[in-house]
Length: 109
Length: 113
Image 1 (cartoon, helix red, strand yellow):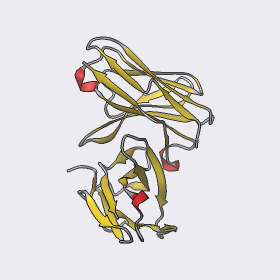
Image 2 (tube, rainbow over the protein chains, first blue to last red; image 1 turned 90 degrees about the vertical axis):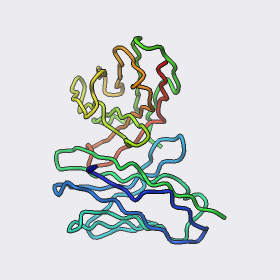
Image 3 (cartoon, each protein chain N blue to C red; image 1 turned 90 degrees about the horizontal axis):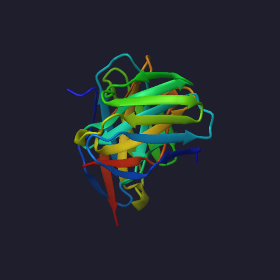
Image 4 (tube, chains in turn yellow, purple; image 1 turned 45 degrees about the horizontal axis):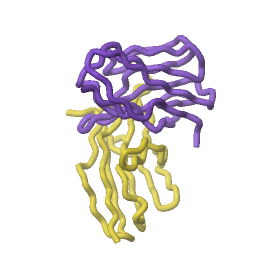
């Protein structure tokens, strides 16, 4: 079993839809969590950190569930420009980062 | 965007030859990383640096070496390239380590034939 697992994709949604991705992790000592966005043949870019209390940035909401060991990313009112691969990253307190394989989102007109 | 550049952007090399990839930053960040990205494996850490001349191995370090003689430069060397090292290589920087998030360079697409 991988240390970090993401929802298998691809997700194909119409514009305006709400879509959610989950990312589960196996190491209960994990300390910090992030979501990155990666466009095709580009580098990953930090989308948002994930805080214990949950956090929101415009149409994006990230949540952490420590009891069930997963993080989630919710995108509301999807735009064509949201089409990308979304990577979750889980860090241990020793500074080790584990990346998920990514979930591909395609938003269609 | 943060100042981080990788060179070359693309390279084709022959099996058995040494190859050096360069990462240059203008942010004066302490931490620098080399990752490779392959389908089905996500991003995997090759080596990282926590200061000038301070480096350590990641999970896939075999066949790779690194050097950091200046804060701004982090070099990755494939000592004798193999086809299994065909990949996309990303350099990343961080001000405070993994917990602070990464800024990635644009990547180097390396093909070993």
